Length: 631
Ligand code: COA
Ligand code: AMP
Image 1: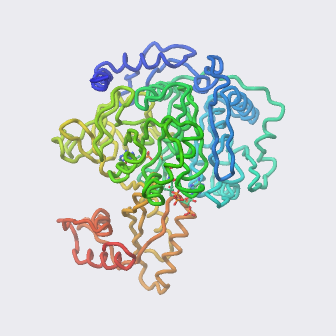
Image 2: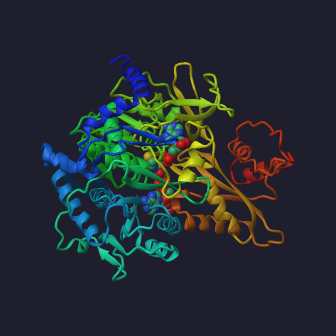
């Protein structure tokens, strides 16, 4: 509909309570709200404050009762184990109700936390749903994080139970999870009462009795657990994401606003009908996996695909097309990096021709900026709209997108289009004034944020305030910089903090610096993100050694590489570092990371006016050339 987007967007900002109350009609509530928005404690807002519901009921039981019992709810497609398994809504309800009962038998109740450290198996989704069913709060930790990261999360959210599996499978590599889990529990101050372990046949874990139980054993003799009603404002999950220090931020998601917003996006942003197949090729450990593998497609009555494989190598760059053909996927959502990997292995898109992908109506990309070359490649070969859309762990759903269900706006390469209804996005200068179209500034969103966005950080309201709300009163600071053009299209250019984006994964260079600084020979260090053809960015370390260190530099470099892998995890993809005599700094002592990044990427840079000693930049350039950068 022409104008459909503008009308919806204006209405959402002019009458937010009516707009979201209407969207909330799509959800089944156990008891309705008397107020839509609680703004009595500004700048902290709560949506549907006194309503009650159960998210799991809205995702499965409701559909079973409403005629979708025999429809596929979840298709597990795992090229790494050669498995395709379908769960109908009824089967998913039954498995979830049993596992919910198993958790309850282990003492987990409303408000208790459960950590899930799981590969991409259906049991990961079942465990998430089971927590939602009994009002427990899950916190999924991505499998590519190391024991130390898991320990930090255990100590922050104090889980009663941890659910894990014996192994993950990365293409052909088996990764035993249990030693990582055991080590994390050893490192953590808080000890979970129990661990429930899914034994996979590819590798069996040794259980530590009586703490550990097998997944199936935990369910012996239990009766299916009903859905427990919770307040709309009660937490559904905590998802940790990189912040500016080694301490990750525990993003909290509520139940009510989340269900309302996610359900709304399925028809209005993605233009998907209940009953259609929706595939987010991501991981349940990331926000995309939470929102668009698990929550939104099931809230909407779709069939979701859980894919345990990669875009390439499982077995080749035709993997995505095979899945689309086999399961008749209507909408695919993934990160641009996946398409860069496919394009690298199959530049002419020959493998696409081997499959019938006519079921696919649109491709959505997020997680990092979609580079125009990748976007054009996808448009050319897939012949469907390719939609770049922008969002963050904190927001849980897109801030900017081409909302296909409202109106298909013209695509501008490099832009995730315009603010989605619910979002009042502005670009501000350092003084809080709106900048002119085309000028880069800090991207902020006026408060209150729409439903489904983070109400706070777990046990850290002060940090929530300081990180997001303090800088510009009345606004949420996205920590992304960019601009808006004359027509209101947004362009998201870079982060304003230390976050880098590695293969669509969000990582903190500050956290990596904390690890490097712990090496006994390192006096000072810096980590920057450098451009990478496949992953978008990869981290690169600079090390200044302590006086008198005689050890070979390559040995120190390989030790710090190992340290980051061990402390943060393989997902950091920290593989390169160089030893330098000094780091370039401002006269007040701030390391000039941005300038180092430009030198490494061979991008023109202005000599910073505040630099202490410009000669250091030549030394940095020389060191970088020796390891293949700064050409
Ligand atoms: N458990 C254990 N280890 C994991 C893991 C998991 N769940 N996920 C990744 N790793 C490991 C990998 O094995 C790899 O280890 P290595 O250094 O020993 O090779 C490392 O972490 C980096 O993994 P990854 O980022 O996946 O890079 P890759 O080089 O293996 O593959 C891509 C590159 C582009 C194919 C891959 O990143 C990809 O498929 N990305 C899709 C995008 C995506 O899912 N984004 C999420 C947000 S939408
Ligand atoms: P995450 O919290 O892992 O989803 O990462 C969020 C960050 O990824 C954002 O703050 C952006 O920096 C970046 N990002 C996500 N999607 C896009 C996009 N479409 N365009 C540009 N950057 C993006």
